[in-house]
Length: 419
Image (cartoon, rainbow, N blue to C red; front, top):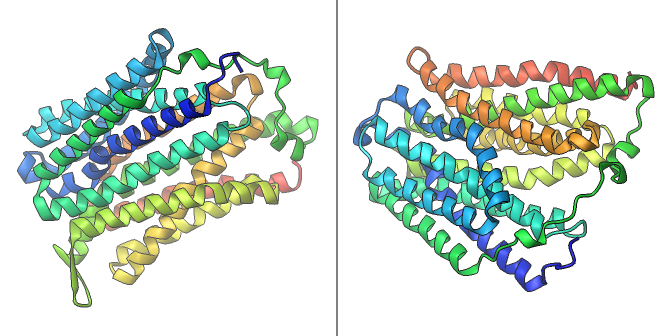
């Protein structure tokens, strides 16, 4: 690393600042997927418009991700992160006062720009203050902060919406995002001076590739096919999870179980139930991510593990529309297992097969594919709701995974026999 290696106290300060700020910033966005479909009349939008509103932030990130990185390199990390948090706070508070499609669309575009700065620069800060001995651990901690914020937002939004209503809910979440901004202002140091010197790609060895040798005559073909299939699997995972399942789940719960759900003598609002269900899904996915990666290391055939991880969501998406509470409680964890584990396994496969000199570009393109799929998903789902029901949408989502399962299984079997 550079001679001016960051001290442990500075590392802890930076991680605390970006971890808390990132988690708090996600509360408004995560809850919106739960509560906006339940309050369309109050905010003055139609069901069809939900698709565009819930995906607008992802469309803008296709451009703003690169802009955020460019600004962070040319300005400094701290001011870009703080600016992004300020925009995020403003956009969340705008949800509370916006009426009609266009004001909400502006707020969602602002949030997309804000999240590019928060997430891209937040990860860059982790890279600044880490080295080969702690980078994986620190990135893991930062991803835990992300998942906790996303999960808390879904559950908190559903509960507060049932208790206080939509506008009070997003106002509280906007204030909490502002608290995250204040924490970053007080604690976040500038980390650009600790950027690690570039290491030649030829000096880097990938243990996973060494552990999984392939015949020289087939390595190129295997790598190309694997990369294409990874993009397809990751895109399918995002279009189903972020695009079709999460945005419609609160509508499904309300449609099938009414405004309240009775659990013995205890009654819970449908919005709260949907939010808590999404929170459990996110947290379960967080637990599955490292487990799937460890399993793929141990069996030494990641495509076999990738094939296995697709199956739970197919089962869950077929069980969910049956409308029984016990089946819903089974279906949501099954879907979460796939949504979480696919992220882990696809990244590991790319690490195995992508050229060392191009891994950063390949991973960046993978996340762009994910954002594009996440943006398209809600548009498809809510447009289809005009002519079909939620059962059709969830069966379509299962079919998407089923279609990707076929080439994944083929590649897993051929990989086993050294094609």
